[in-house]
Length: 125
Image (cartoon, helix red, strand yellow):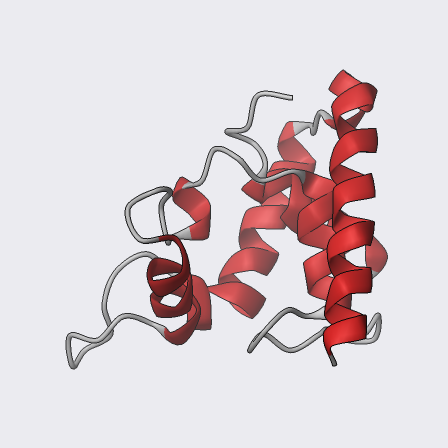
């Protein structure tokens, strides 16, 4: 398990480095952002939406990120300004910590890229 996590971290570091060089190559158009928002709300918001559930507890993904990052960055993914699309795509396909991975039969490559574009829309690349 530790070896797999180290490999995932190494791949993520490479993706981050490469995406920084790509610059505007990851810029998204309005249609892709709209699709990303739609798919984020369908697949991701059940765990990662901003705000508490009815009983006042944070959603599991948001609560996990709040515990992990404290006040150093927002726990709500939609509020983040440091996410890069290739990293989001990697986490969608491979999962991370308690988050499951999603197969291509659940989230297509185009939908995954749209979610990545949507979540990285506030990130200066």
